[in-house]
Length: 392
Length: 191
Image 1 (cartoon, rainbow over the protein chains, first blue to last red):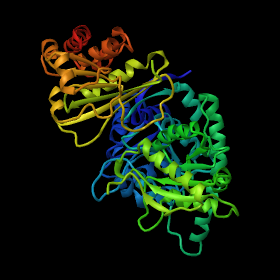
Image 2 (cartoon, rainbow over the protein chains, first blue to last red):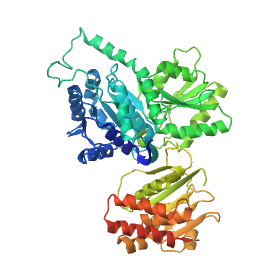
Image 3 (cartoon, one colour):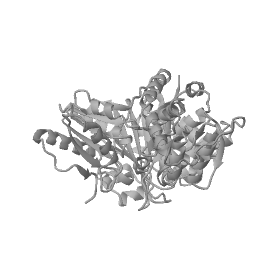
Image 4 (tube, chains in turn yellow, green):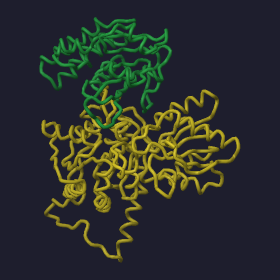
C-alpha cells in the first residue's frame, strides 16, 4: 500500500507528475505554482524522470510548446496560476480545439488589478468556456488523486481533451497536510502507457492539425467539441471506479455531504468546502438539517445530477470565490441553470467570498446557514447576490 | 489528547518559525495522527512579524483557515509581546511558550494570563547562539514545546529535526540544532 506523508499541495502534485513521468513539460514560473514546477524540474535534473523540460519565456509559449509536443505524439503536462493562465488564453482554445490531452494543474490565484498573488477562482472560472475539462480539489490528497485521474480521463480514446486540475493557491498549494502517496508502480500501471492519436511525428503518415477552417465547417467542428464533452461524465465515473480499486478513495462528479435529508445546503468548491463541512456538522448537532455539495467536475457541468441532488432542499446558497462583475457568480449561474427546469426548486442565493485570498472562516459558513434557516422560516430572501466577509 | 490541538506561532521573518511548524507537523504524523502546518502569507520580509499555524488531530482535519482559538501559543520573539495581543482568542487552558531570558512569573504578568493558563519560558535565542552560533531559536522552541505539551517524545522530534535540517545544512549545523532542541527540552521553565 502507499506511503503516509505530510506534504504541501504543490509537493503532492509534483510527486504525481514524477510518478506519471510525462514525455514533455513546458512551464513558466508564477506564484503560487512556482514551487510545484521547481520540484518537478529537480526530478528532471536528478534523473528521476525522463521528461524533457522546456523552459520558455512566457505562459503563452509554455502552452504553445505543450501543444506542439502533444500534437507531436507525447504525453504532456504543465502547470500555472492566475495571470499565467490568463496569458495562455489564446492557446487554451487551440489545445482543446486540436483535441490534445494535455494535463495542467492550476494553482488558483486571483487576477490583477490590483496585483494580488493569493488564492481565488477567477483564473480557472475565466477559462471555463475554453473547452478544457476541469476537476476541482479540496485538499492536497484530492489534488494528487485528481492529477493522476486527469491523465486517464483526458487521454481516453473517446475523449482526447485537455484537463485542468484546480487547487487553491497557498491555502492548499503551500499548506502541509497529511496525505497518502500511492506506490510508483501502482500509479504507472493506472495511467498506462501513453497512446498517441494521429501524431505529427508519424512521418509515414503526414497530416495537418489545426489548419484554417471556413464558415462552411467551423460550426460543425465546434458542435463536435460539444458532443465529445457529453461523453466526459461517464469516463470520469469509470476512471474514478478504477481509482477506488487502487486507493480506496471514492470520487464522483461531485461530493455530497449530509445532503440526503437536508432542508438547507451550501454549494461550495475546493478548500472552503472542508471548513464548511465542520459547520454543517455543528448545525446538524443543533437539529438543523444542513448539507453540502462540492462540485468536482465543473466542465462539463453535470446539470441533471446536480439538480437531482439539490431538488429536495428548501433553500440553497451557492458560494463563489470568483465574481462576474455585473452578473452572478459563475457557480451560481451553473447551479441555477441546473435547477431551473424543475417545477419545485429551492430558493437560491449567491454569496461571493474569499477573493484575493481573504480567509473563509467558520463564522462565514455559520452566517450563511443561519440566513438559510431564516429564509426557510419566512419564505423570503433579502437579495440574491451579496459579498460576505467584506470590510465595510 | 483532545480531538484536535491547534497551535499558533508568533515569530519574525528569518527566525525559522515556519520551519518549526513544518518539523512539528512531520513529527506528529507518527501514530496515525492527522496534521496541518501553514504560515500566513504576506509580504515576506526579514524581521517582520508573522504567524504560522499547526493543527494536530486524531481524526481527519477539514478546516482550512487560520487558527482562531489556539490551545498552544508559541512566541518565538518576545519583542512581539509589546506590539501584538498574543492572548487574543486564547482558551481558558491555553499554554504559552515564550522565548525570553525572563522568568515565567514575569511573563505571566505581562501576558495577564488567567490562573488556568500555563506559561513556559525558555531562553531559546541564547541557547541557539551557544549551539549554532546564530540567533535562530526555532529548534530550541521545538524542544521546549515538546516538553511543555507532551504530545510527542523528544526522540521523535530530534529525528524530524535531523531529517528536516539534513536536507539543507552541514553536519555541524544539524548537530547544533539537535543540541539546541535537547537543551530547549531540558531548560524550559514552567510558571
